[in-house]
Length: 157
Image (tube, rainbow, N blue to C red):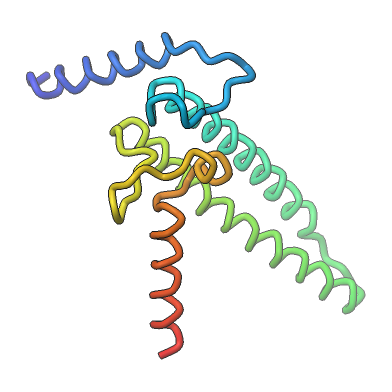
């Protein structure tokens, strides 16, 4: 291995060791009074994201099972149409879940890179309340609102 690979590998091992050392009480909630994105806050959000991802993956597995079960041939046209509608809804839900898992993975990478919790537009800290409600947030509320207003203006053209 090259020296760069060894250095990167040891950095990964150090980060893994640091994560293992972070003690997080079960009732821990990030507070504005502590330093922003300290080890405890990062660990809190990392665990929250991992649990959310596991729930989504579990739901996706259930969706696949349901789709396989619903693949039977239904002779009644109304029943068949209803089943096709249900199937389309399940597929849309699964697609949303897949996109959400991708956003969760991106948030976990930002935690690893030390970029988590900061607005990708302004570089300002994202409020802890916003991150707790939406841990995949990449922008402050103000930046998100500006972004959505800009999108709306361009969509109306």
